[in-house]
Image (cartoon, rainbow, N blue to C red):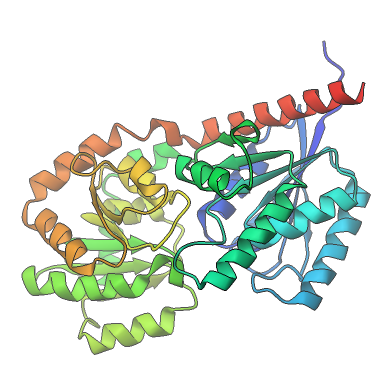
Length: 390
């Protein structure tokens, strides 16, 4: 019988938002095998998942108010010093960082605190083609600098692996693909739950419903969803639309809804936790993102057997196969998106066939498999580190 001590793993996350990276980190920390691992979590106290994180069992949870998303040099320096102090006190074997800000500050702090192993999960890079070149070069330089402090990378999409290798951030030898998982069974067993969602919002039970589940921020381009809804409504007058999520563009989305005369047909639902029921309620899921890592909302829709119309960016084509499990369009192609959505609403049997085909392709997104693969990675890296130290 092995008497090896439990591996202490500290996860560092910027904000406890209702995003894929945040939800998956929470699930990982909650489900790590406590016989082999002693998890800890460090994040900001501001966000809808904060209370749930604070209530984690058998987990050291530390909130750092100085962890904020925007670049604020003084606040960021204070956050760095707090992280160094926390890591020196907790003395983890592994630090696992997520998101751009926590990824940079956390990795620097981990090296200053002499943490043996540092891992960073890439949920999409902070630099992309839609930002000004100066900012893009700056963020890429920061990622390259932090990469020198990193023992292992995890990417959720092969497209991010290719991008990271091309940008000189990592090589094929120190990156591993681990999909962003979802709990499959709640979506597979959600049949009938959507009726309550429709009733709550006054959406007729048989009306075609098109929805997007996303943070209302520039990356997701929610204004394109509003424009698309107006064009679809001209072709399918009985259609309804739903935006689930919130964020900095909420006011702009509301203004566009008013301008386009969609107040009665486009609901802004804010953040919701009953996503399996939402997926059961809708007929077509839309995602208008300009860039992505690999959005977990896609396998969520697929697990419920719903067809998807999404922009063909980054990891999305790794999930959706054009014409087989959904439809892909170029980012910003509102007309193309409206045509695909209209096509599916007018031919619901075709949408059903796409959704059924998609439901058979989501096995690799099982969230428990995601946790087990991370556990194996932790143990492999610790074994390697101990061997090098011997």
